[in-house]
Length: 408
Image (tube, rainbow, N blue to C red; front, side, top):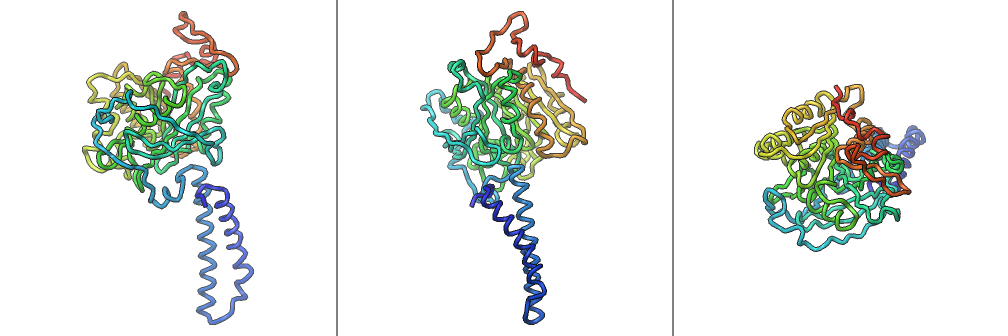
């Protein structure tokens, strides 16, 4: 029975009802020695408490997409088949353009809020990771007017623990963005959510650690190749961005800073720079790994500032200070947009990140030089006199730089 399935939830509800009825019906009817009666009543109370805790946990898990299945919950899942030393660039010297095309079969994804989302099981040829990847296509993708159009891509990363479904099932990213893409207020992005929990009971930090896991290569090499081989996706880095929240926010910033040849922009919601922000992260286990995977230090050590744009949001003591540190470290052409969120906005949870989805994708539309297009008709030509902005961009305000001013 699936951990996140309706049958399991209904079973827990039925057990909770039974756990309430049993004491009411049997409490005074139990016969036998006093010790036996006490033991029976104690078992009924424990049964009621256990079922209640299990139901609350399941509801919280389903609402936040923390654990996808029993293997994730019990710490028995392992999606790493091999973890070779692939070098600094994560390719192991492999000429990626010479690799055969990746052909995948996609099926409708199951679960609440997953309408229109597809899923496939991908065996990463370079990373050695075997895991699921979820894909959502924008409304324009299947229209005849756009049959020769290539679309920008955003990789979506969850926190830890976290399911790859979370951006769809909990943040409702596609449901929020689809009407804006149809009306031309946001550019039509392909949304890609790969699994990031690859080893039992630990956060990979989205890093390559020889002999343990090649998570960076999985996210920045294998998954993008699969997407470009199976969909009309724009090439990297011009058409690619990465976004995440919590531990996924740390990953997003680190991937973009480390690989400006693969990503043009990154979004970090309540992220951190020092991998020690997630104590279960493999990259927090030694000073060397912490330094090698700190996006602020990577940016500081870079001989040439990368041509990337970063969107960083956070609250005091929950992402904001890390965002300011990156902003202070960055030099042109790196750009950093910091959004201050007051404590009154909520805590470190989905309720804080869900309202940020639309502003984030408006920012991505602008920073990646994209034009919003209206579903049902071909995209309007760009106007040189407006710096490449389309009438839809000007009307929606996405061509304005005012939105990029940091809010304090």
